[in-house]
Length: 221
Image (cartoon, rainbow, N blue to C red; front, side):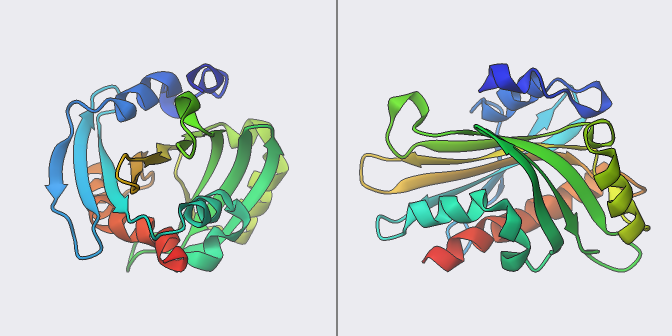
């Protein structure tokens, strides 16, 4: 999977392979918020190459949870907006083999904060390392203006005040455990763009991350 990421290219000169390697590295993560009522624990770590903080949410899914249904909800890029109250729209642009290209438009989270939109490409690896049910979807930013100029123009016309999130990387991962449960992990590092300080955005992201995860888990419970 990391070899495929090399061909994507990154915003602000970022190296997708290096960023995903940092996010996947289990070292350096510190507790951000303790396990909440729905079972999500959030961790954070510094990504020096970006000057940003990354966040990781971990949730143990009970054996009674339909993990395949959770995976399918995350993979269904056309319908993220139907599950998340924070999105105006989510659109799959193109799919080829293990790779998808898509965009999403987020609603304003509060007064004086603009809507946001992003273009990402996602690479799916199923049965990681030969382990049945161990799946991963890793996303990266890409230069949408170069690849899909007409779509970018249309989006900017329909959302003239929206701000591009030019840098966002992360992954969803489902790992079966020996006791029949599944560890679900969500990793993300993002620069919000616009005039919102990255530190403020990181703080908000750390707080909203559990709800982002549960958006796709709740329908499968």
